Length: 238
Image 1 (cartoon, rainbow, N blue to C red):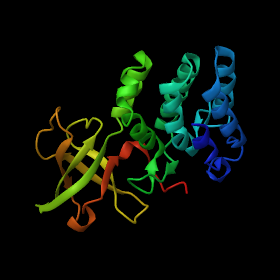
Image 2 (image 1 turned 30 degrees about the vertical axis):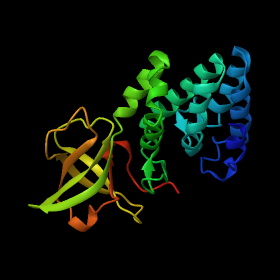
Image 3 (image 1 turned 135 degrees about the horizontal axis):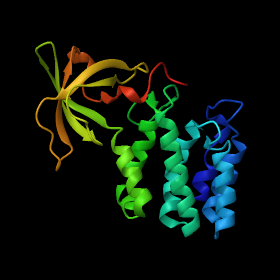
Image 4 (image 1 turned 120 degrees about the vertical axis):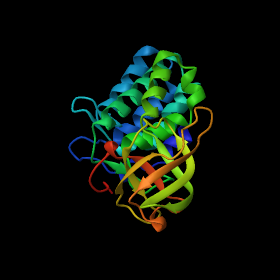
């Protein structure tokens, strides 16, 4: 865990100069990972919540929170109980602040300009078993992450004035017709589209088919990703 912290140059990550203090990140994460009691865990949490991963007084969250999410989840798994509680609280605050942030975007393995809330939600879903076993706060985090669904296109066919896209759905699609962002490989700027289930969604399988209205087949080719458009607007914060 400590090696993972030191492997990141936190100063290279973007963030508002008047709020983001990258020196706090490595120090705070190392202190939290090694904390063995409430006072040290709280001190580490204060470093991370006051300019490290987020700025709780202004409700800002930084791209560093996405990079640090796997480390915080490792602390939830392996840390001292007080450190685990602090890490869960930081993840909870980061996701809550990110929901209100319609500007900041980060590059992830699935797309180049993902709203920060969706990027955090992906990390949380990747540790669903851990969070489900982490009490009420962990289960609430999972439930909040589910709102930030993601659909990975694996196959697409033209149909009418749109496209029927077959793929894998993560999170919970709210049903009906939704406004979504279409992210295509090599394209940073997301395109706004309307999507709806083409067939009834199954609660037992992530496989799904969505109708993408008004889209071109070459724009919804495999490796394209759909994200809820309410999670972000504007261009990437690169």
